[in-house]
Image 1 (cartoon, rainbow, N blue to C red):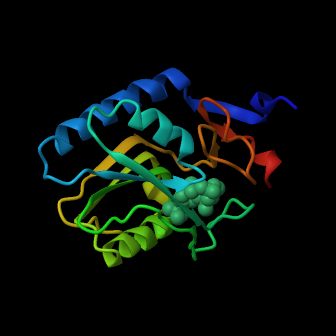
Image 2 (image 1 turned 90 degrees about the vertical axis):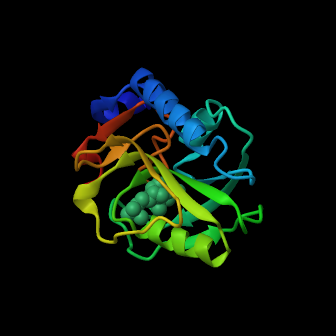
Length: 188
Ligand code: PRP
Ligand code: MN
Ligand code: MG
């Protein structure tokens, strides 16, 4: 099966992504240098953020720690259930730590708003968000960053169902090296 033939059009190539990831990593490096004594914790949201996180952390020039949570709300469909669930918890204690949540996409905002509340309840000092894609057209919930937290965004995403570079449809397409629009006939 040629996954590429399922893509209507490429929005960001692997090279464009790579360049943008470098910019985000330098921004984070700059912002968190001397920020405070504690080592920032990078929290990736599995599964979607795995590639972005892997590329991003290799370009951050600071001591950091890395952990994952699993939050799921889409299942095998294209529409958010509106009720994300944390189905796998953190390993690292985030109390009094600066946390940078790494996401592949912020869509309705449900996942992030749940996660930020959760990190707050675990005593994080600040919560920043670094997302590859932001799709404001679909926002349902406005989340508030915690403390001195910042919002980092790779690209503003137009309102299409996009896959690749970690983003899936029914768990497929995550391994495409670029982000593209899935042919609508494949999920309609
Ligand atoms: C997707 C995506 C984000 C979230 C964004 O995850 O990876 O985590 O939805 O959507 P929201 O802003 O509407 O909450 P999904 O639930 O599909 O799980 P996955 O990462 O395993 O694909
Ligand atoms: Mn996800
Ligand atoms: Mg998904």
